[in-house]
Image (cartoon, rainbow, N blue to C red; front, side, top):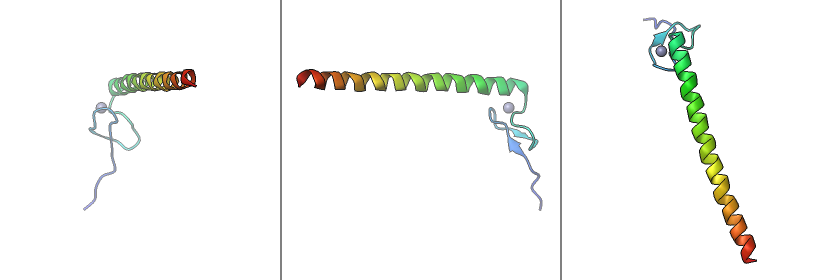
Amino acid sequence: MEIPKHRHCLNCGISIPPDQVFCSEKCKIEYMQRRKRLMRTQYMFLAIAVLIILYYIITIALKM
Ligand SMILES: [Zn+2]
């Protein structure tokens, strides 16, 4: 039994030829937009974490 070589679309997961990453241009655009949004969310969390750390450092520094 031979399993035909294939990949899965990074956006919707359907089977596609091994030389492709996405099943369509639409899926590619969707994936890029989703990733961009995800990265923005991660940056936001990072910024909040930095602010909290800075707040603690300032609070500790003021007590000394
Ligand atoms: Zn797709």
